[in-house]
Image (cartoon, rainbow over all chains, first blue to last red; front, side, top):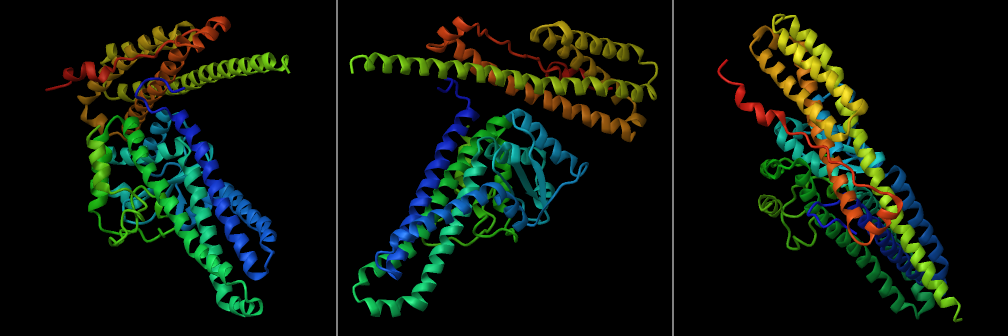
Length: 304
Length: 187
């Protein structure tokens, strides 16, 4: 299907992402059904099946909501405001020019008033896309470095990564919420029912195990998905500008900048160009990283 | 049952051919859309030129030759857009780019002009437009390459021959800035 050239074909990436979206929604729905079923069994033996439609409904509603309004939610949470016409002309020119090179309509541009240099893109497809950059990115990076970062973000837009990331972010949030709610129910109601019934011990153990495991599984998927995606966006971004050193130099500057981005949180961190939280390394580092190590990203760019 | 098997085989083949045909149409459509991107930016460049010349004239009225060269190149480019092939058009636009570069080199010699806000805005607009032309061209050529490869390789080449899909032309502009850069010095 793909042309035999080394060019990364944006249309192939889009097709691959369509399948990934379907696969992700399937996996998340499966997790939700398992959670729902077990919860039902705990509270009323034989009632697990009744919980399945509820779980499906919840997953459907949250997926639909995130598809249509997730970008606005993320932008509002990041306290981003849309640029007025004539403001930050250079940034706007960079975005427009690179969008032409990628063959997508220029996304809407938002500004986050924070001195930590960072950026992210969000939306459901290139026609409904937004790109947000921080004040620090404009002030601290020069033009070629900004071009590198913008090209990286635009390739997320162009190959529909933004949709996958948005869905994943919101669905992970839903699962976290649900398992949290399960724990509360166990704590307040589970014991009493357990005494009435006697035989529900194993189900209860499975339920607790699931309540612990599903959010972890969900998060691992999210991180694995986003890490792999960053390398890809680096590569196609560098291909777009034809100047990998610009992006590499931007990464170096951002790595050296110790400031954390205050408006970012655990849920939105994986959307950003570089990890905005600057958190201290943990024992499980690597597995729980939202971003690949910057040194490795630079190394790959320099090898191009 | 025996009748069913050849029917299924035929149905599969027909679906396969329809899929290939639709793919070719999609790719040709992408080439046309990409062409529209270039067109928009080339026109934007034409539109900037009259104002640019007027502004420079105010400070360097006697550089008549340079102005005329740009105006002529612009008309030639507009004429090529009306009737020419992409190749002829690319040639005319390359010539226009060269003429504009000369105009900018001339303008360098007038410090008062450099300080005029309108001139600064126009120069920046021109530079931005030329960047956009470069990127639009690259996107177009990438799509042409994918499309041309498809109509020349098996199995799509058979369909392309049957339904008259012909190869599209690349839009090649040699970068005037690269060629002429050494000229601008010591003035």
